[in-house]
Length: 239
Length: 400
Image (tube, rainbow over the protein chains, first blue to last red):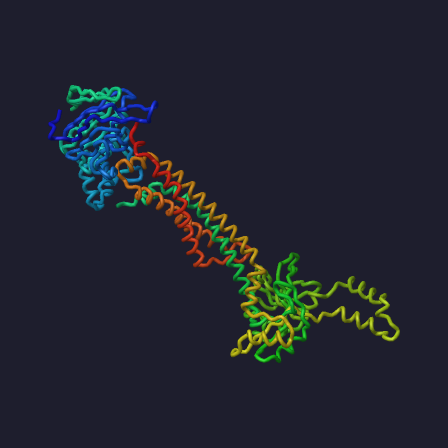
């Protein structure tokens, strides 16, 4: 467990209820979770357990019903959003890696990565320079001018990791990032996520069903019936 | 910030160009319709210009000679020449007819003009080949659009005419080319009956007791003679002296000669309000329908293109792209499509305009107005897609 004074993301008693009255469904029933900077944890659970709801709450896409969320040193939710501009929050403080890379098909991979800093108002040249450096770090700099359709699935996923990292957010939410990949590529993606987490001191939550990568996590949160249970992982080497 | 719309258009240029081409053909039709209207207006103006007249004197109570039939005695022009402020006066007849040429008919406006030097009202203003009419009979000057050649013979009613001169852009208000012939021939062509009709008329006169009184034995012969000649013209065209206001001369003629007189602005008003008004409204309605069809097509295309990018838009929203950026992207694409369509439409309209049987006048100002309309229509048409895009939930980017 990360130290309490070193927070990547911290969730306390997070609840989410859909609907009202007799039809109300409690998707999250008091979730507690804490991930420190530089740490990669797994979030595992069966379908319908509340994984996606938790991910959407963490990603500031839907509003929880109650609880508290802290991102870095900022309380972003405490029985209500504390940040007025959730889009800016998502752009600057949260990185996303999806099951499919969902790169913008009409931008080359450098611009795909540089788009976020550009949206934040940074000059194009500076944003592209940073994006290019990040792509080189992820061993995909040689394809900087390629279009997403020209890349393999693993390469596309590395680009989406670069996109998630470009604004150096305190937390990255990875939703089944290895699902479409074979074992080698899946483990390569997890290795990259661990390297990047260490290098940029980013907390990374990986939602997964993938049996290949579950043993690589040092800590795993199991989610069942809207509640999380923490347990130590095997932390197997993936090298 | 990079242009997301521009990148998307470059990335999917084939789709945009093909769609723009289809839209362009529609815009080309729209521009051509506007050109047809302009051509009609120009034809009417050109016809008035070509008369060289400042005033049109016609039968009282009529709006002739173009909007209504008008008959005046052909000797009236002499008295009009004596009116103060009148420089020149000339009789003229107009007759829409089919002129036989080499076995097929050509729709033309046959204009009967008085012999006189070039510049006489009613005469063609200039020639591009041959000479003006110098004889009193059986010579013709034709607009080149008739297809007639110098020296050819054409048939008008029963008589053959030799084409002695060719002119250009001498057309009637409905775009038919003009054929100028001597006034006497035109009067005959306009009113002369055929032989059978003349014989029947003479028989009727002979059988009518009122014309066969013993006291006046020559009455019936005189009557027959009068009925086989025509002393009417459709209008007298007047040129006023340079230092005189045409309206003052017109007022004087109205008062003293009891004739209907129209000035140039009044004649233009008759042409536009009476003759081409209905066609103009018809074309305007077509333009409105084409604008609605274009807007619907653009809206449908942009909506379809946008809905094809639902996941990308969800991702853009999830990673923090502002709504205005997404809306701007869709609107720019829509306008881009319109610009491609306009360029294609302008080019195609320019190329196919000369093929039209009627004059199509593509004015730069109309093109500019068309461009502004296309941009506005495309911007409006994109609103539906923008509304749909802004409704896309960023959560769609997250599975589950």
